[in-house]
Amino acid sequence: MGEHGKIFSGTLSAFCAGVLVAAVIGGVIYAGVIRERNNAGKSVRILKLGHGLPTEHPVHEAMVYMKERLKHYSGGTMDLAIYPSGMIGSEAECLKQTQNGHIDLSKTSSAVLESSVPELVALGLPYVFRNEKHFWKVLDGPVGRELGELTKGMRALCYYDSGQRSFYTTKKPVRTPDDLKGMKIRTQQSRLAMDIVSALGGAPTPIPWGELYTALSQGTVDGAENNLPSFDTGRHMEVCKYFTLNEHTRVPDMLMVSRKTWDSLTAQQREWLERAAHESSLKQRELWKEADKIAVERAGKQGVQFLEVDKNAFAEKLRPLRENQPERIMKYVKRIGEVKE
Image (cartoon, rainbow, N blue to C red; front, side, top):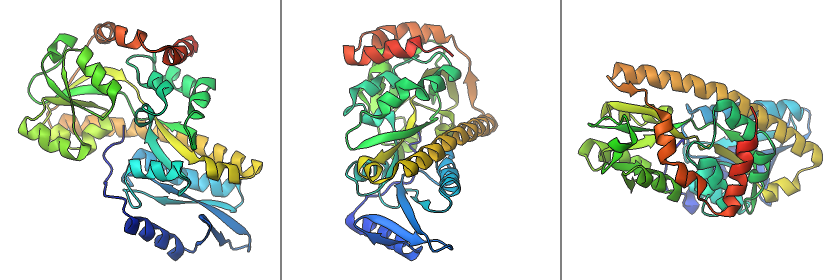
C-alpha cells in the first residue's frame, strides 16, 4: 500500500489554499465545479483529484498519464487538477471529501474501506489470488466492478497495483511461519492485517507510517509487513536487514470518484473518464514493476538479505482465516477462486 506520502492536517485553511491554487491556474469555481476556457473557447470541465502520495510515486505518475489521456479523449474539454502530497488533506481526508462530493476524485487502499464495505475484505485475504494474472483478471472483470460499486457516496473507476505485502525484520530472519511467534510486527490500522499477524503467532502492533522508521530503529517493533517500494521509500532497509518473500496479501489501491460528480457527467464524459482511468491503471502496473526492481537493487546495496520461503507453509497456516469469513465475504472469495487466468 502506498502509505509513504507526506501527510498534514486537512484544515479548512488548507482546503481553501487548494481552492486558491485552482483559481490561480485558470479555473473558476461555480457550485463546486471548476471550469475554464480552452484555446478554442470551449468550456473545460476540470475534475479535482487529491491524494497523499509524493509526486515520484507510481500511482501519482499514473494519474498524470490519466490527465493526458482524458484531455486527449475529450478533445480538451475535460481535465484533471491533481493535488499530491497531502496538499488538500491526508489520504483519509481526501477520501472523505470525495465521499461528500467536495472534491471529485481520490485514491485509497481497499483495506481502508473494509470497515464500511465488509465485502472488500475478500480482496485483502491472504493468498486469495493465485498469481498476478489472476489478480488483474479479477479486478478488471465483473467481481472487481461489482465491488467497486458498493461504496456509499463513491464508486471505483479503476484499481492500481499496490504490490505484494511481505514481512521484513530488524534482527531475526523469518523463514517459516513459526519464526514470527512472539515478534512485534507493525501493521496498518486494519482488523484483517492484525488478524493475519496474530494467526501466524506474531503480536500485531498498529503504528502510523510516519512513526515506523523510528519504531524499527528503537526496537519498539521487531519488523513490519509491506510492499517493496514502501520498504524502499520509507528507508526501512537502513534498519531491517531481512526481507521475507512470503507475499501473504496483494491489497489493491482504488481510484474513487464522487457519486455527485459521476451523476453530473454526461454519458460521453463518463466514457472518456473511464477509458482514461483504465489506461492509467495499465500504465501504473508497468511503473510499479520498475519500482519493485529499483527497490530490490537499493536494498541489496544496503546489505538486505531477501529470503525465499515456502509460501505454501504460510498459506496453510492462514487457511482458516481465509475460509472462515462471514457469508457476504465468502460469496466473493468463492467467485474470485472461480475466475480463470
